[in-house]
Amino acid sequence: MQEKISSALSYVFASLLSFFGAFSLQDWATIIVVGLAIGTFCVNRHYRKKIHKLLQQHPKLRELYEDINS
Image (tube, rainbow, N blue to C red; front, top):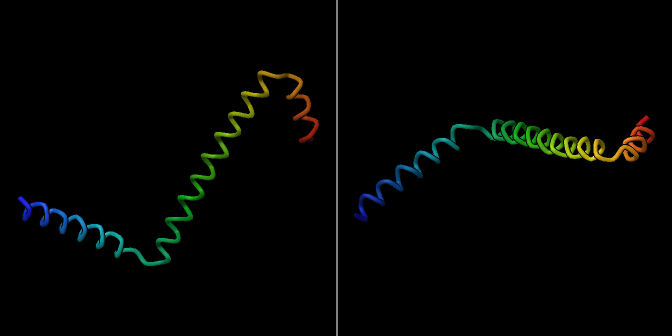
């Protein structure tokens, strides 16, 4: 039983290392930057939706928001 687990783990780690080794440092930087850009977009969208919902519920806040942003 231990041999099967050991063999499976060695294949998993070998696969992971070959996957991570296939990319250069520049490729990893690009992947990370794209991931951060997508994450930033999602966070901004989430908070924009919250602000929009809040402004719909409170008309006086909407007037204040429009005055500040104009």
